[in-house]
Length: 301
Image 1: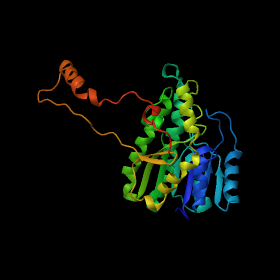
Image 2: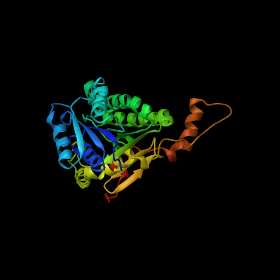
Image 3: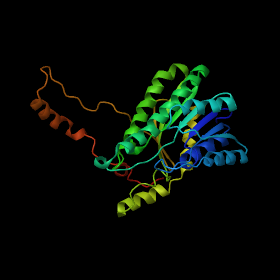
Image 4: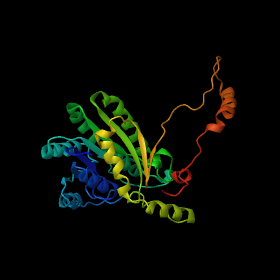
């Protein structure tokens, strides 16, 4: 489906990123494997990880190169795009997948836990997208796929930093879609369910938590890759600014915020009158404080 296209996949050394990169290559794309091989919390480094995935792709008959530039450094974004252009002459697909996790209950969350997560997920996604946008504009075509999460879309305890980053990515994606549609550039988000390093931090103490983790472990990262490849292909030319979700064999389209209830008066409001009206009018439509597991109550298909 993506024969002849050039793709950049960040965080492609393991998990979902690796699966996406492998399937893009299997479907004919030339792939830049970007990964510096850090631990889940962003510590350490294994610069050989990206090269190993690139070798796997080439051994299977595909085409790939490795990149070990850290997306957490904005200046590296141009270098990653340039590597793709120098090796393959263009870039057509950007998959913003790289990320780290620093879970902490909010009143104990440190500034570094907040800012480092935002830096990698949000700022890294912006930097690479911005670097590729100029190329997409010149080519009059291109596709961005950004990884969001139901932790942000719905909620999760102890992940205010991660939730903020993933919801901000949704806003960024929508902005890209609106600004660049005149150049036939698309931008979409995918919220993946899959057992990977990113989900290995899910609490696993109570019986309910253990059951949830067991469900996650059924879901292979390879299940996410087909949707990402499709969104990068010309077959998805009419899809932009959307939020999709993959849960094993299920693919979902998520809603986006729109007004659900309105109150108005010709005379304006006082705090007291507004409170009386809002409590009556809005109570039945308030979104409950749920986490992802409260919404997805059925077993993965």
